[in-house]
Amino acid sequence: MKKINFKILVISAFAGLAFFSSSCTKNLLEQTPTVDMASSQFWVTEADATTALMGAYSAVRPLFDRDYYMDGQSEYVRARGTSTTSGNLRLGDAYNGGNYNPSGYGSSFDKMYSYLYGGVNRTNYVIENVKKMLPTAKPTSIATLEAVIGEARLLRGMVYFRLISMWGDVPYFTKINYSDADVATLSRIPIAQIKDSIMADFTYAFDKLPAKGAALGRAMKPAALAFRGKLQLYWACWNKNGWPELDTFKPDAAAATTAYTAAAADFKAVIDNYGLGLFRNGDPGDWGTMGNADVLPNYFYLFTPQFANANTEGELIMAFTHGGTGTNQGEELMRDVAGRSHEGSQCWVSPRYEIADRYQSTITGDFATKMIPTNPSTAGARTKLNSAVNPASYANRDYRMKSSIMWDYEMSIGLTSLKSTGMCPFIYKSWAVNIVINGVTYITYNTDGSNSGYVFRKFLRNYAGQGRSDGDYSWPVMRLADVYLMYAEATNEILGPQVDAITLVNKIRRRGNLPALAAAKTADKATFFSAIEQERIVELLGEGQRGFDLRRWRAIERVWCPPNGVGVWRIDTNGANQTQYFVNTTELAYQQCYIFRIPPGERNRNPNLTQNKPWM
Image (cartoon, rainbow, N blue to C red; front, side, top):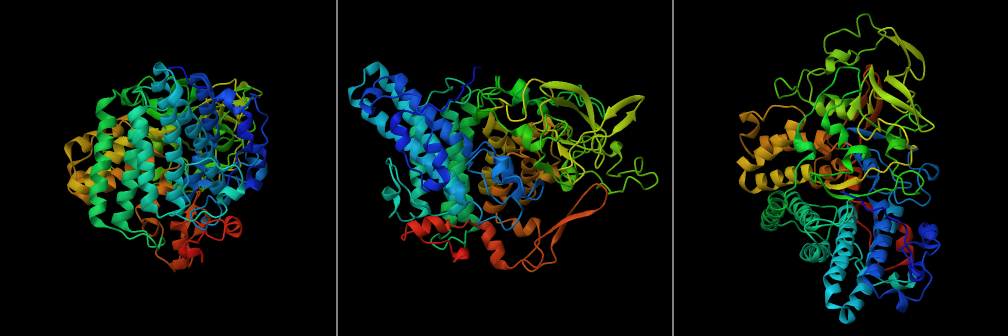
């Protein structure tokens, strides 16, 4: 499948669009127009509408395509403290200044709030103007124009969904705003009302979009259904588990059941009606050999642009494409997850030690004996049974482990100046030094950003030719595997473990070369939920889902510790303590993890904006 190559296509009227905080978006507003004509001359043809839509995609893509940072708000991924300073992200980036630690992050997303509203405004611009084209359009053009509106409404719904997931009640508008004055008096709208409006956007998109997108990166019917299902799943969770930090919201058990049921129906339609399949049919492929990267399991290739952009099976239900080298539209996955030995990358994001024990045994299908953190200088450390620095401890594990993380003596291809430097072994704390392995001299992986004993292999390019910020991977914002797991979650909540849901979870496990779930894992609702959560942890690692899951499930205290507890250490493979979280953390601080702060700057400009309760 060909992919869409987004360009920042801006007509002169776009230059007048204002986001919520002009100081945060000045550079976006000052982009040079590529078309210089009056609005009345521009909005004439289908091509004009599509050009404007590409501008909306270009504005919305940077609001989602670095969500791997969001995984730092969970327990299995570390985002370094300097990772989102202005020098390390695109100028004015929505992720800039965010706090991607497991706690204390709720006050750090003022820029994202502003940029999300920029995405709303850009999509409104397309929707409003293309609607004006419909009365005079040729009959043969109407379906195309309505599909353009459908894509823009899907994008708008995605942005508002992100806004309510973080801030709860927010201002809602569907018209173009040209200045700060246009939004200076807007009040926050109850989340239930906004949810209904997002549902209407997703439903319109479903009605008007084609069953298959025009290109990879263009929205299609199953994307609209999947997002509608996800919205209903979140709505169900909030009604089941409560959201006490949002004092205008009252949970309703009956509303939760209704929403779970509707979510399951939408997910079922995505699964059954569009011929979609898991990447490479969900086959595990080959593990290869320990310490070798010539052959890797199939799951690894889903996350590299060389293979996944084809998307022939349709696993990437909704993805944001990137232009690659020389386009100024490359993704920065390599820079963020790799080290200096890979095009001078910076390893801002890395797996924590604790993720390794989540990868189950391919022999038993259950958790293996926990690994023992061991200082490698200890006698026998590299050969001790279950030692975390013994490569043999990682054998016979879920193939997604080999695909997702690297431990001591695992190899990847070093890359410099767009050329391969040969195989590069990762050895924790042995940065860029000569080492002889089986008679061959290597230079070890220079990745001093890691403090866990692991680095990501997931998202790591294993071929030359692209710079660290020039990748063309299509970042998934909705994957079929996620839909399988959300369907299982929704049906389990209302009916308990169901045969079709268990089958879908086992399909995902199969890509890790794991046996099917044992009967004990599906005996009741609670045990099956644990199995679903386990698969979400390893299947979606680094894709920005876990933090949102913990919040909608009210599970932060469960995975860390109760308020005013002693805290929890994150450690490394050598047995050293690295960082302690939630030490004597007050109940208020936990509440501030569940809902984000309305930016004070926005409240200063708009006296009608109220503040969320934990931030008063």
